Amino acid sequence: MRLTVSHTTTYQFSPPKRGVVQSHRLTPARTAGQAARSWSVSVPGATQGAAFRDGAGDWIDTVSLAGPVSELSVEVTGVVETSDTSGVLRDHRETVPPMAYLRETRATHVDHDLAVLSRDAVAELPEDDALGRAHALSEAVAARIAYRSGSTLWGTSAAEALAQGEGVCQDQAHALIAVAIAAGLPARYVAGYLYSANGDLAADEATHAWAEIWIDRLGWVGFDPANGCCPDDRYIRLGSGHDAVGAAPIRSVSEGAGDEHLDVSVSILPDTAQSQSQQ
Image 1 (cartoon, one colour):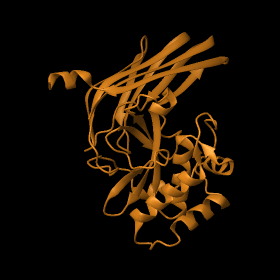
Image 2 (tube, one colour):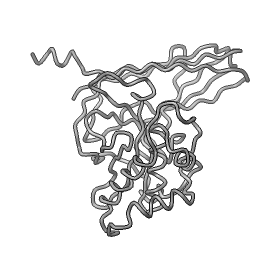
Image 3 (tube, helix red, strand yellow):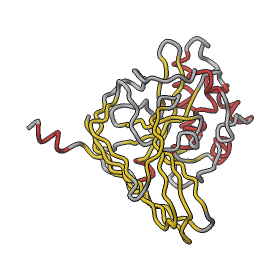
Image 4 (spheres, helix red, strand yellow):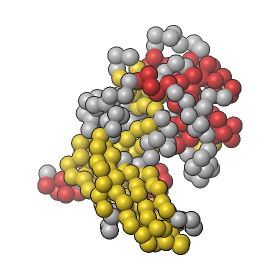
């Protein structure tokens, strides 16, 4: 599948900031399941800083804007060709060892209830069936945390979402990471995009999140509790981290106090130009 992406994030500051520095994890990962055919990330008026590939294999760009900054827009456009690899992350070069992803964060801290959920989900599965255990953990999270848009906040933890019984894809991904770690399986958070053929996804759903769990002899395998599946050709993978903070597509540091307003617009559509050329 070839997908076109248009993603604009606009920040408005009142009063204006004295300066803003951002790091962007907004370039599609290089994997066997996807390849960017064209891609552009621009911030009008910004100065380009360092650009590098980090240990997790993600491409990082940095930009800065000198003040006064009353408005800032990050504009992403491009075309990505995707294929279904049954959730298995292939041909992705990285240097961070999988065991590094057994570390909890505040968002993925394993409390008593998460530990019980993890234990019960895999109780009848042998320890050497890591893939079966991972599927069972994802199903358990989906059953215990119902997807409901707007039901949680950015800083909600996996434990809080489980206690509440509902959340968004970020919460479900955090909870899956937590129960996987409790079961001794390295797991990490993935940020990206999701295409819906129905065209019914809001901006906060088209920018999507899921988890990857390390399976010996297979490598990293993606699981999306929000949709009850492993990522397929509808998904575009941007980057990963221990949690949503570490994997955030945009991270900002600004100078100056005041109010900040954020507006996000995302469109994920089939590449009509490619379709017309094949007719």
